[in-house]
Image: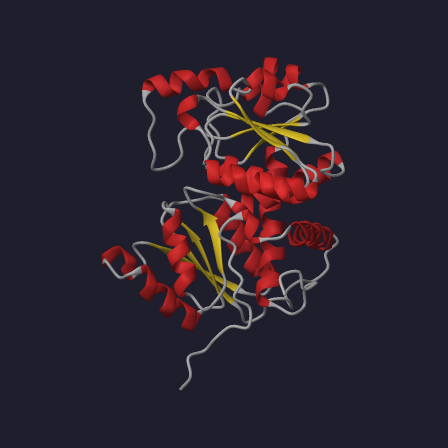
Length: 321
């Protein structure tokens, strides 16, 4: 018997696996699905009979619930698989896991510690693989954030986002997704938390096509001057550690009322969550009138649904074909 194959084998491992046209179209489709959801239009026909395997090396609230609820709303089913639920926990190879799961499910989402793990998973899977977070990138969050920016600011052209803090996987996805949609992005970070130069180069190459600018700075006050969005993330990602000296250096990058005032009266505050109020951002900012953090969290659901429909159904607009 022939090995079953999928007609769609697109993998979303980093944001720039999408072209600028695909990224903007996917975000627009997510906005349409969100509007249909609130209008009560049925969506169960999209993915009836489809199954998503969700591999979690790292626990999550938003990633798990948004994918699982999204599949349910679209008429499909999601399987939560921790390393304790898989033979990965007993030494089975990623390659064998990918080959086996590809025979059972229609797509695989994985939230991993090492980006190389998701690269290997995609190399051996014959179904689409989605990066639900790795140490290099968080593409579903970055793309969902672009939906939130468009909702609150009306678009991306001529707008600027300043990211303050440790230049981690989230910073990488923001420069890539921002470049894709034409949003200017500034990363302000201390010397010990610099972004990956290869990611910055890739983002700048895309930005030259879309008219955006990508910059890496050291001064947070310079970075926030005249921006439309101030963004931050946890200083220490799950599974990582920083010295006390490094944490002390990050204090200058805390998003507080003074930083928001420097950004300007129209600037909004964003954070991908979870958050440590009083560390990377003050509670005054996080829970204040300019914070859109819960809109961001919700938009993960709608972006995930748009991506899943595109990967697993012919009923979508055909963005990834």
